[in-house]
Length: 131
Image (cartoon, rainbow, N blue to C red; front, side):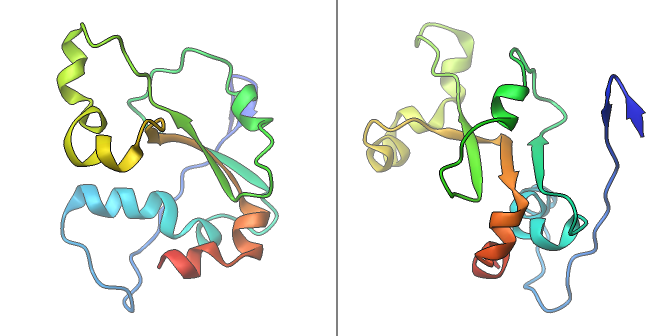
């Protein structure tokens, strides 16, 4: 389809019988977002941007599209940090406990918005490694 000056398509994919079945709907959605990128899209497609349907985009996605991934298969967007004084702070789980210690000051990158170099992802068999 072509609307708003860009092409898009809807994709459906069945969970493979050989992979441990997930029963939690949210985990299935999260898995589809990364585990099957190598087989979900046509081989001719070089790059995709994944954007959750509930994301509010406040910048030009061309910046993400044009991002130099430095040979990496994907690039995630850092989560807005917030100033710790708003109602959303209680949802920032990465600022306390396990995740705060694990990240050690590094930014938390949200899986709701990222770019994937499908050619690199396939070349390094990233899907096979993740599955």
